[in-house]
Length: 321
Image 1 (cartoon, rainbow, N blue to C red):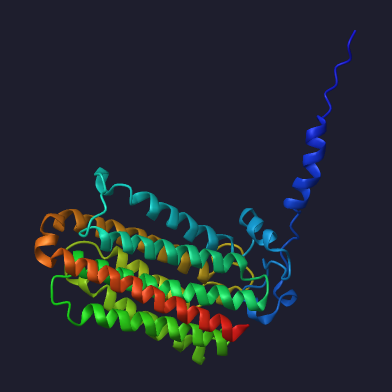
Image 2 (cartoon, rainbow, N blue to C red):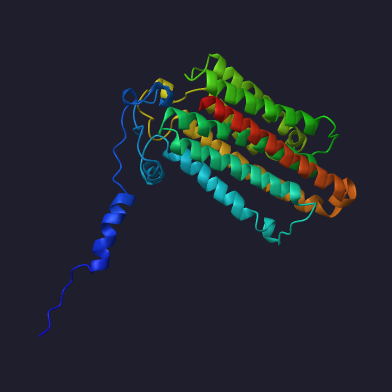
């Protein structure tokens, strides 16, 4: 009678060691005193990933519970939803033409900023050099998103003159990127009262107020939810609440930076839905109103702006190296 063996086949035996090397066991999170000051958040005392691990360990930390888990997943999920919604706003087929190009560039800039933010928080604990590099990338992506938002809003939602709006928002987006990178390069310790905080918050907040300007008049008769979400996001970005009042209690879930990420992601999703609505409403008259050449030139200037920011990012990385 033949013997029946339920042991793993030889192929499995050869694959298992390879999988164990590819998927190493992750060390448990550590306390703030076990990581360099650059990686610490005020009033967050635990949940930090140890520095110096292989890069694949930080990729695998997507499936681990630590104090950056919600920061990463909130923006990753929002980026996926934004890209998926571009397939067809309001159930209608989406075709790429001059009228829809600013909307495509807006979605590209939003996905870029959400993805770069998720990557920065995913890899920030590897080393101080990589920490700075990824947050430079994050700052550049925020500048691109500000410009992409301004371009789309100026075409689909702006009811007034655009002579000042689009150039002004471009200048502020460049200022936001430059100030954030300079602050990250020269002022590492995060203190809400120091120069780093002012350099990051002032140009970013000013650019945000200019970008949402076209929506304010319409929102008085509709919903203030996008503006409220972005304002709350800025509040939690600048104020370590609620962890200030109970250090260590909100380390994994509920600290201010997580709330800022979630609110900004929700605000971006609502903003995209509003742009889809305006796009479908005004699409038949867009070519006649702006002319195809003007839309193409504005889109070309967007790529020029992205190229300049890419050169600036290269310069910042060179300064760190």
